Image 1 (cartoon, one colour):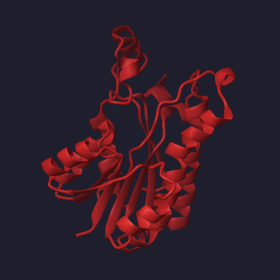
Image 2 (cartoon, helix red, strand yellow):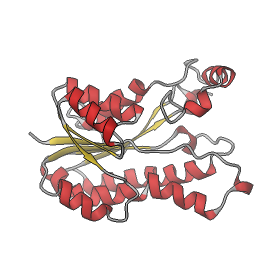
Image 3 (cartoon, one colour):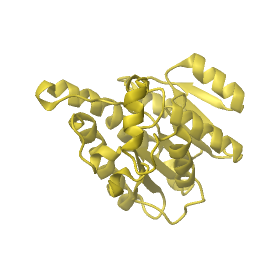
Length: 237
């Protein structure tokens, strides 16, 4: 049975996506940098895992060695960051660091796995942010990197059709491990919730459910889309 690779599997969205795919009897392979968390999750879901630092200079070689012979149906890149800073305080290195995590590894991963995905009429799911389409103060760094992801999505969807579907999810702030520094303030969390038409902060399962839909044969006619999972923030505010 071909597998679904979940990069960033121990993050809140990656974990939830892995659990949802597992419940649907999909064969999954977890990828992350924290071996203790991967081992725990893989034991729970009865699946394999690979330990990988996505920033490694040996990424292309690792991908070829680890996944070169693997039969792959889908790839989700659930790795990201929240880089917030006024432009006047930003440096070129801030933008480069953000791209190094959010953008450049995606290219290497897709290049390495393209043939297997094509053979299986597979799917790729990437992640952007609502901040690309809806301007927010202090979001220049992350919005630039995720804007590149959105451009890559539609370009590759055209290049790979009809053999590989490529879609992107653009969530709002989600209650995840990564966002706890922002949401730990009750006042801040309440203000963010009220700024959404749905009057709450996003949950990991909100985003993971869409990722599962786009990865599997539940969505065979959807490609090249940037889909907001944002409580209406991008279009109703």
